[in-house]
Every structure is written in structure tokens, then in C-alpha cells.
Length: 149
Image (cartoon, rainbow, N blue to C red; front, side, top):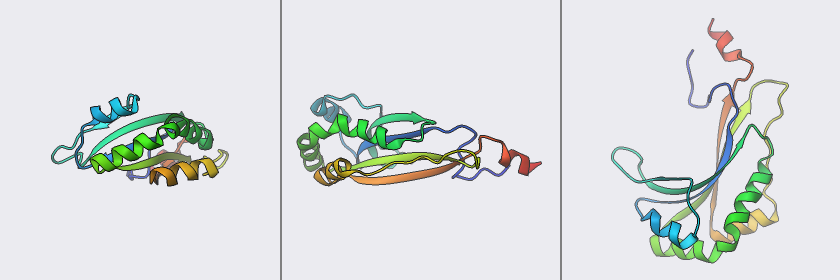
């Protein structure tokens, strides 16, 4: 079977994360200032990763309600807007909320949903945070495997 980059297997695994990104910075200083432990960090190396990132991730699994999970993420970071902006300025960082969404190709399955309500939009605007979406196909009923036979 030819696996495409947009295919993520046979199980939905939705998640979203808030990240600080730059070529290089001291992730420990961010953790200390925010008083939040990241769920992961990536440090720039050759050839990859091409940049450094501090991430805090919320796993949604096969839940289709990503709006509630976005609210949980904002609950954690909204009170730290001033700290976030200070860190961005001091270390020349960008911030991003990344949605990683699996869409089940089973016609009986619901598709994930989310909303950017007023609170979410205000947080994004107040912190200058970008939003990015990665969408992947998931085959919970084995259609792609059957097409290879």
C-alpha cells in the first residue's frame, strides 16, 4: 500500500498544542518563567529539527469536540498573556496553536469540530499567536488496505 503523508493509520488521534518557536532559545528559561512544564521540547540540530520548540500538548484522542480542548489550552495560558508577550519579545519567539486532526474516512463517522469563540480570538490577538492545522485521513474500516489487494 502506498502511504501518503496525509494518511495516519487506522485510529484517530486528535491533539492540539501551544508552542513557542525560534531558531534557538533556552527552553528551561521559558518553563521557569511560565511555571508550566512542557509536554515536549525540540532543540535545533542538523539536519533536523530545523528549529527549537517548547510545546504544551492536550490529547483529544478520538474525541471530535476540539473546541472544548482549545478552551482547556486557553485556561492554562490566558492568565500568562503578559509573561508570554515578554518572553516573545526578549527571546524573539513566535507562538502557535497547532491543531492535528484525524478525519475518519468512514462515512458513518462524524468529523471533528472546533470553534474560535470570542475568548479564543482575544487570546490569539493579545498574544500574537498564529493558528495552524494539520489534517490527516484515518481509515478505521480498512478501505485503503482493501484497495491494495
